Image (cartoon, rainbow, N blue to C red; front, top):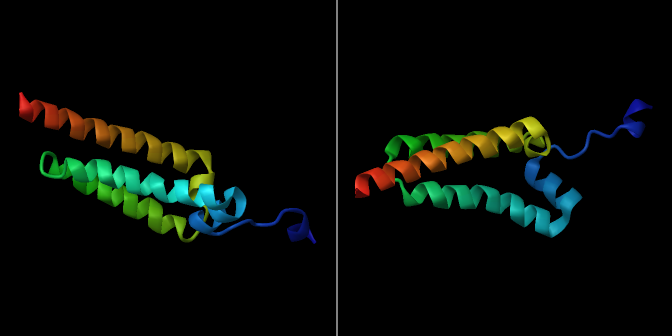
Length: 100
């Protein structure tokens, strides 16, 4: 039986983190989304476009993570990290530009 040798693994980011990394892995996976949301929410009035894109990014990664372990792969995790950095940098830049 080929499935016995190579099990499919968890089909959900949160359950996968809980099952493979334990409670701390689950908490840190949730904090990944919460911390990014907190950051973009802070600058929501300064840069509405980045806020909307950030919310869409969180929604897409979180919803797609319900149907598969997306953050376990390098491509999706790297994409989320790079896009988060770009959006956070743009929001921070717009905030600094408005203050000066």
